[in-house]
Image 1 (cartoon, one colour):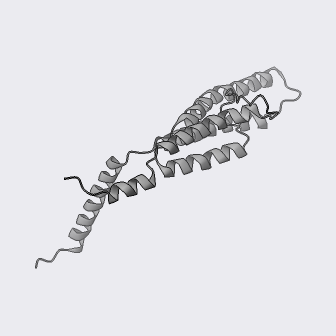
Image 2: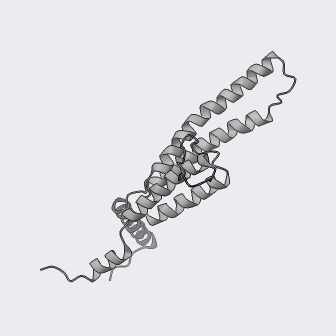
Length: 173
């Protein structure tokens, strides 16, 4: 029996681990919801920084130069809002492809809702039932789209029962 050095064994184990990880990565493509969330977080951080800079600017008794600076700060907010809004639209329309992705998306949207949807698209209006006297049309618009997207994604997932039945089905000859 040939003895292997510790280094040889570690190299073999590491190689097997990398190979199995690569196989798993190709067998299960990345859920697109993660990229949509990352993009929304990145654009939201830029918008948040612009809003914070504007909120710290004293806007009383301004001279001409300060007024020009204030206008630039407000334009920076508008410029930051456009990509954030588009990332929000992409986010609420991206169907998670895994159960884990659905859970992560719901948790992320919960945070957005707690923040009154400040970083979510505002132009999507929710049409209330004509018998409803509810309000919050702007809030409900993006949330309604997201819920529809998650419902579609959930319906597209394989049923645990159907997977179980396939595993128990006799092999075809």
